Amino acid sequence: MPADCFSWMPPGRHDYMPPCARRLAAAYVRSRIRPMKQISLALFAVAALCIARADAASGSEGGQDRADFGIIEKIKAEGTERSKILETFDYLTTVIGPRLTNSPAHKRAVAWTQDQMKAMGLTGVRTESFEFGRGWTLNKLTIEMVEPRYMPLIGYTRGWAPSTPGRIVATPVWLPGLEEAAVKAQAGTLKGALLFTSPIQQYAIRADRPAASGDLKPPSPRPAGPPQLNAERMAILKAEGVAVTLEPNIGEHGTVFVTGRDMGPNAVTSIVLASEHYNLVARMLQQKIPVKLAVEVRSTFNDDDRNTQNVIGEIEGTDNAVKDEIVMVGAHLDSWHTATGATDNADGSATVLEAMRILKALNVRPRRTIRAALWAGEEQGLLGSRAYVARHLAGDKNKAARDKFSVYFNLDNGFPPISGFYMEGNEPARLIMAEWLKPFAALGAIMPSPGHIGATDHLSFLDVGVPGFQAVQEYITYDVRTHHTNVDFAERIEPAALKQAATVMAGVLYQAAMREATFPKPAPKPAKPAQ
Image (cartoon, rainbow, N blue to C red):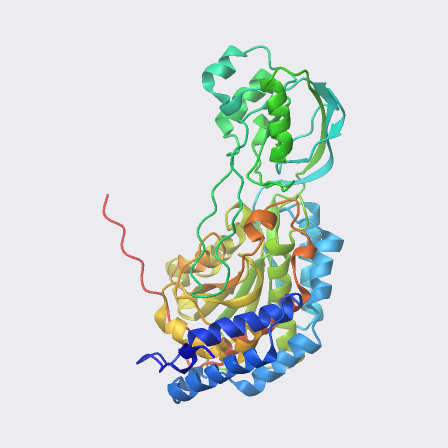
């Protein structure tokens, strides 16, 4: 038995869980979620003993922020024994599929999730529109090597790529790096060209961010692949008559990382190839082996409505003194277009809906209003959450609303199970969360991290001085295989992990809605130096 199970609790650390308990509880939940990785129940008993010793040592500290074990047990039963999350997740990934912002598929997802909120009995169900721009749908894509031998190539257009003028069969032109001098040297010769724009791809991402275990340190940013051509360079290629640009990516083993943006009237059809296939053709060009490709792209721009929508629904508070205070949970509904957006972010959207369903099924009567949001336009720069914050929380006109806004929880980075929350340096909030997560230790929600994380919607709330926290989730295979890739499918998600995430989220929302005071506000940001 590890000696650190019996170490005394550090002075003043009433949220403390011994290191052995953290390790063993995490191992236990992984064994439940991944049956291939079994550990003995005896080890879990040791973890439970460690937790009990820590709880005993902590005394009765926690007061109003101690977890309500009675309702939490009901939430656990509803979330695990009567879960509906798999049906929700399947509908988003299998029936609707990819949900590129403001595409027809995204609009179907907006309508369907709105219907789901109404069906479960949420009140105030609505959409909130904001200007986005035109949508886009890919209708056909073929990329083939036809000489010196036939081979289908793995590749995907960037989002908002225009159609090609039919099927193009041509020998590619290779201008690695698109150096200005090289482009000028080819002036007048690029009409209808299939243009390879990058050197042979040497780098591939082979490591994920740190897993959601241990000290729960925030993940490091992922290195970027070849950048998308900027508007100025794209306009030059358009003027030269280039038909298609082709580039590699940072994936390997057929994994293709693809995003995109609307480049307007100067856009050239842009395709990202599997790096192995890009490099094969590039080596042929380098060695002057005759090679021809055949490419055809058909796409549609959806110009009928340039506004897109967030979906909002809530469980109204029942305490007249605080029912206009808001506890909020959100996830982005939009995805990229090459797979079905399972880990980014159908899992998060399904978790939001299921957490609200659990609370409604139990007929809870929260003191504060619990509000759910499914954001649009996250992949294009947190646009949906920023629009919501600008409308409801930002500026002098919304000061009263900010004062009554308790906390926002976000579900995005990584995929379930939930191990904790990144507490953004808000130590008073971390201590509260530590108490609230104790009933979920056996499910693997172990301890809130004091650290920070970026690139998702809670930042919109932090920017106006209200508490916002992203769940700590799993990163195994997330960065190397699924995040913004052609293999972000439902197989990446474990059903038990989805149930765990919704159960934990429902419990946290309930406790935030019931506590005596609103959540502690983050420390003010340092003033910017005068210019």
